[in-house]
Length: 239
Ligand code: ADP
Ligand code: MG
Image (tube, rainbow, N blue to C red; front, side, top):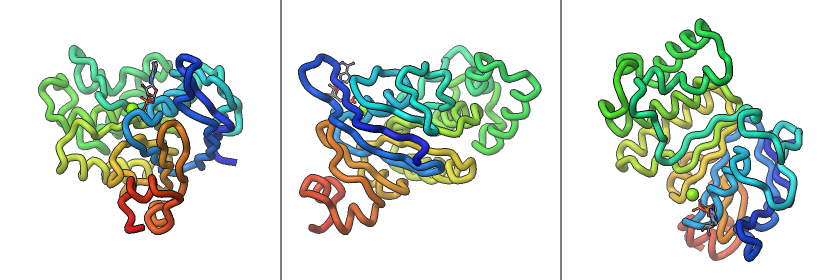
């Protein structure tokens, strides 16, 4: 059994049209799983349903074999990084990183321990007293990642976390996120519309178009054996 199981998951916002259509999928523990597809294909909706930020119209969602359809986000033991990585502008880097831990009632001593470790790991040790506006785009993105890492959640969801960065930094951050995920052994569900990002980062990739799964597989399989013309042209394989 996978760590995340989606069984016949469908979603409609207005009962007119399914924006996700009978999604069946298992994501394994410790896997770096990429959801890729064009804009409007339903990636964010799917991720937000896993996070508990969006109602499930029909179907069953399980995390660690437990049905979580109606479990509130805070009880799902996951962390999330969004595209615009919403840091609090009036709080320091340190306060931003620790923000979620107060709500979780992690004691002060443990918070400091995690802060020091995480800042070290993310190269933020020298920047803890700064405000977000005093940071570069890459540094801000690291703070958002640190905030997610410090929660020590076994499951991390990321929605296009690098799309606001320039190409060079994006390449660097891809590697950092991969390294971090392996080191912490967390399960990652990573959303992108960028096929290069998908191909270089994913253990497995799911290609989504118009709310329907086109193919799920390893990057090499999608490249060599695309299931249909859409996957072939989206991934850029020769067939
Ligand atoms: P992606 O992240 O792949 O770009 P989304 O999950 O954001 O796709 O959107 C999938 C579809 O659902 C789109 O057609 C979008 O317009 C629609 N949609 C997303 N959020 C809402 C909402 N809150 N209300 C109505 N329709 C929505
Ligand atoms: Mg989206």
